[in-house]
Length: 165
Image (cartoon, rainbow, N blue to C red; front, side):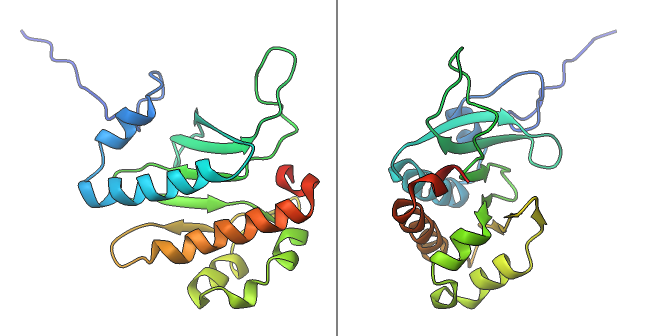
């Protein structure tokens, strides 16, 4: 009787934290290219740190972008809200950009593409924070979402305490 070990994809294995490289390797080439573009833009936003954390089902291992604010042991402070989440599902790459009401008002949402505005308008709001989540698949204009990231960064730069809100 042979025992074979089932190897889980890095994105789904709750008990083995993957590296960003391992998450990227599991993606098809086109998805990996979009992943790289969005990740590079997020890393270009000042004062954000990238970390991989288990977020439960359905997001599983997710890249979290949050301001550099650490507690006594160097861990990310629980009071700091994530700025964005990049969900590296190889079959359904997603980007979630958390937005407060103040940020939405400051960023001239009406100038964004309709599908991006609709994502904000119909997103779930929890505790005063809107959670628009976008699928980055074929036919998605990543530039439109990069514009959303740029507008949020400008809104946060105008109001420094807004980056953590």
